[in-house]
Length: 232
Image (cartoon, rainbow, N blue to C red; front, side, top):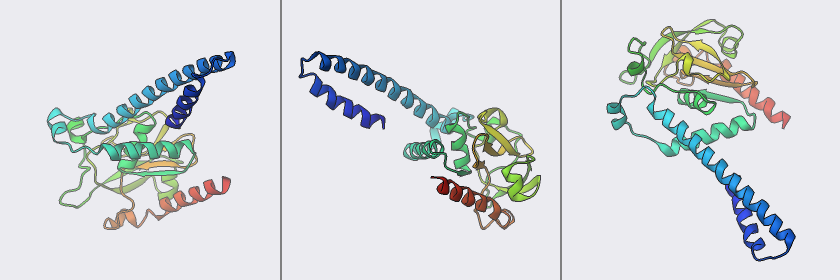
C-alpha cells in the first residue's frame, strides 16, 4: 500500500508541476509533504523488518555459529509479512515451532538463537538422529491449551534448537505452557479470540503420543477460522 500510494503521488506531482494555478501550487505542497511522510514511514518499516530478521538469527548465538548459519532471508521476510497481515486482519492464527517463534518476534518479542549456548543447563530440545526429544510442559489454567489437551501437564515432542524464555516473550502474550527448564512452550495473544503459538509439533504423526491427543487443538483452530469467516 505504501508503494502504491507513493506512485500515485509521484504521478500527481508530475502533472501539478506543469501548472501555475495557485490551487495547483497549494496542492503540490501537500503532495510533497505527504511524499516526505511516506518516505519516513517506509524507512521506519524497513528498520523494523531488519530488526525482526536480525532477531531470528542472532540472539544467543556465538560468532562462530553465526559464521556457519545458512540464512533464508526470503523465507524470513515472507513469513514476517504473512503473520503481520493475518494479525492486522484479525484472523485466527496457529504457529507451530518456527511459526510460534516468528509470531513472538512480530509482536515485539525476542528469540534465543541457540538454547544450549544461551542456557547450558537446558533440557534436550532437539531431535537426535531424526528422533524427537520429549519432555513435559506445565499448562496454564484457563488457557486454550488446557481446554484442548484437558490437562495441566502434557508430554510434548521437541525438535528445535532456538527458543524463547519468559523475559523474551512480548507483553501482548500470555504464557500458557512452560518446560521444566523455563523454555516457553506456548503463548496466546491476550486481545484475540485465537492467536496461539506452540513450540512442539502436534502435527507429527510419527510422535504418536502427542499427535494422537492434538486433534482438539487443530479443531479449535478450524472452528475459530470458521467463526471469523462468518463474521466477514
